[in-house]
Image 1 (spheres, rainbow, N blue to C red):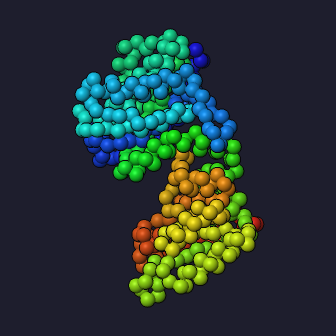
Image 2 (tube, rainbow, N blue to C red):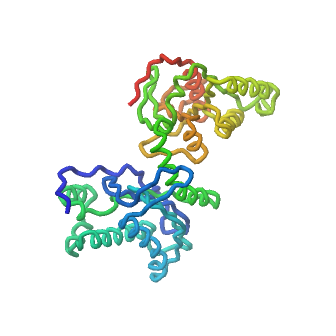
Image 3 (cartoon, one colour):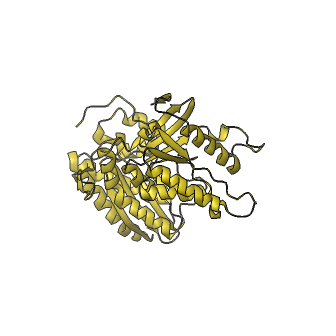
Length: 366
């Protein structure tokens, strides 16, 4: 057994479940479980981006076997679910579960039962340890904070296999479900890329650029490129009716932007909000043109971009910047800063300021 730990494990960084949602209802969910203290005990990854492979440890094998039993176990209790896919990463696990009809228990009850049986088998097969029923009952009655303090004094094998919390993403529609499954299946490749290309996949929760605070994901070197060009498009042409992206002026600007990119040493900078901006942003991502994308959504410790932007990051052609204070930047034409109108203009003002940076600009990266 491991020696007793004297440091209280960190509180899970995963977001709380969706307030107000009825988790008894039918639906599909992407579930993420994190191994306690991020111990890398479930699997090992190879170094082949094109043929990623996961080698399970005995603990990972236990987890995958128990997940495959989950549907049958729940069917014996009159609950109709399907476990659609899963993957064991070194320190966390993803699975997609489909609930076919409303249940008498919540999805959380099923996930917690799965976590519990994984912990029991892991303990028994690793060391033969079996938690006394009285101890298990006493721990279940503790608050989350009391459990953390208790486990901090116990050897690792007496702690649960997985962190106290878990993350769930609720499926919106069939297309979203397919993306969930694709995300799970693609997880090993993404992890290998992040390991092999760290300069292209940097995550920074605090960057100060000329006095403004940001979080970032991607290739930070793009900030130092000599020539940066802003793509800024209103939604409507000056006549107030024609979509701007349908005008001759927009077509000419697209030609100019592409010419600048093809000359080299030019980065497109845009929040990609209006239709015209979105077209150019998406074209840069698709073609691999250098792009700094300013987004209003925050970037946290475990935030990840969707597949298309992730792949652009792997090529070193994308940096995603998220300003900390977008809703506190001030009114625009007397319209509050937390409205879509003000965000559109404020994010474009940020894009303009990024374009004005040179390679000697003041930056503090943490």
